[in-house]
Length: 272
Image 1 (cartoon, rainbow, N blue to C red):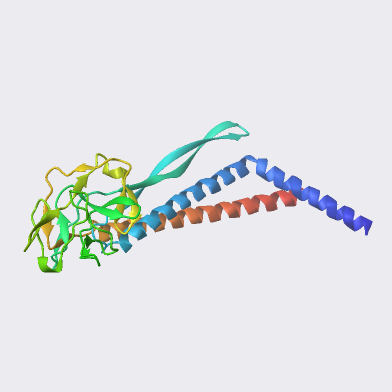
Image 2 (cartoon, rainbow, N blue to C red):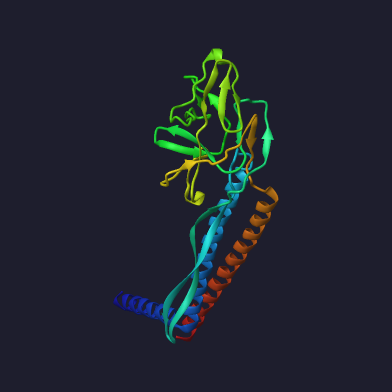
């Protein structure tokens, strides 16, 4: 029994030395680097694929803006047997939003409004003012012009725009002034931002901003229309195919690298 334990102990020590030799071997360094670089690429491609899939899922979302991932090269200093080398990885720096205007589509709903040019509607929410280009509005239980979630649309006065049953169907001029049978009911608060790319998406087509908005200079409102998303299905599908091919190539590289690592371990174990 003592002899068996001694043999097992020596076998474990031999295996540990073997693994150490593999990991400190120059070829092993290259294999490990290949694995980490390929993994970095796969993570970036997976993130890109998620964003593309989200774009396609929101093709029919009113005023949705196409998004794309911003990647950046990250150089890491790695100590090797021959000195310090720089290994290139890829990191995700965030998402860029395509702010180009989508096509306008006429509807039969006179509470649908599309913005032609720059500008955002101002919405009152429990979390403060939010902003959107989705002009598909309804009247909530209080008779206020609101989003489909029930958040009131604010006028230039800072108060919600309220319509009574006797007002009838409103008409909206190009500058956002709302008029009914009983007179003017207010003017839509349309705002712009110095840097729209800093707007933070919060869901339900709403955005928040730390920047103080300013009034839109020359707003043009089109009643009875909505703005479509600016997603191009053909472009997004082409990008998805390219990303999937790159992902498969990275996976194949990792598989090949793992096989070489196992071969190196087996070769060393047979020579010791």
